[in-house]
Image (tube, rainbow, N blue to C red; front, side, top):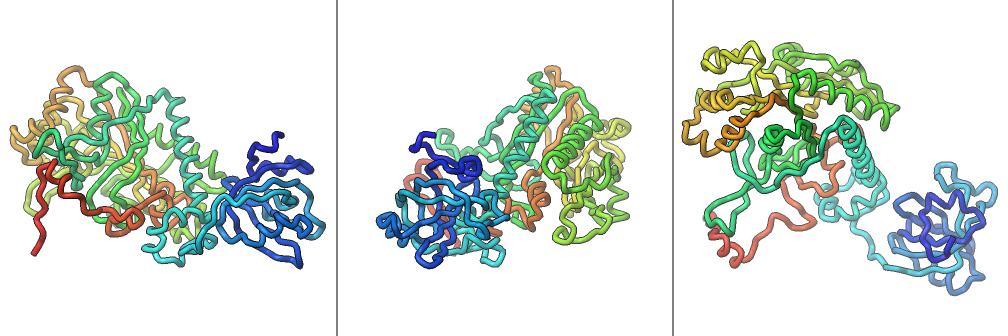
Length: 472
């Protein structure tokens, strides 16, 4: 091996008696008599470095080392003395007898402990120093496992002939449920884009375009109050399929989830395959929720972390009454009713009894995904908006592009979106989705590390034609 080529720590297990170059962060330090032991950490693991006094210059430099300094060493890989092995480490039978040491960067005393699991540290401090918080093994592992699951889903869908397609992040504000995050247009003064609550309309338009099978790992944005399983921005596995019925979509997702657990989490047990199917009415009556927790022990995840009780909830009401007596949708306005209720939709009768083709997938009491078969005929979609109380002009202004697209040979289609952050939190036995996201917001939607949201220059506001009105 060329001595100038960096090796990863995990690879030294195959390099006994070789001289290698390692780079990483200083961890624990131990002084045994005159010998200095340093734990070196890189992305792949830990190695024990050994510094002895007879290499005077290197030894004196090693004496200065402190936690989290960044260093480069050149050293010979040797077996540890008998009785000094560490069976808990991949490299625990070996040590690095350091010949040269370069200090690449020093580190001040860290404001937070990065060696504990971090659960005893206040969220405000952890969020402010998130780049340090992520050094702790638990969070570092969460991000790596997150990537493994996404790659598994991606490979699974590609093999099923799905095409990964990116959709716009700035688009049109339309009434779909939660508040939009608005983006002012400089070139079109007084007009606004919106960040997507989901790629819902674009993915349906891709079905009109004849792609037939689409998916995307999509960033979504909703201006709503945060909680343990909700953030202002989150990640969905979004997909849509043409020429399908409800069972086709559910089958793809069920197989994908089961295969993922078997491949990546064999220690976990899926309680029942196929997943149980429960109607919305049955779920509410028997479990008091449309997100039933079907774990047999029904114990907190911390006491029973390997039990995965999936289920499908189906046959949701399409519409429900608002406080002011009008109708609103329970899922999204683009869903189709179940086939036997299409006539009621088209005639706008028995509205409260119309059931939608919506299907939610639930895991251990959390909704981790939801989808439906869509209305692919413009007249049916228009009836939904009429029931919701929208006037013709408003329907055209908000959704005219969808209605027009459906006139040009839109295939029957349906899809689903999985809330990836919730799935990760459950699989990693974390109490909330902030623990599985790289840079989450606090409970009041702030980024303490970047100090966002923040005040912007008056010049920027003037370019956008925006004036801030301060509260008295």
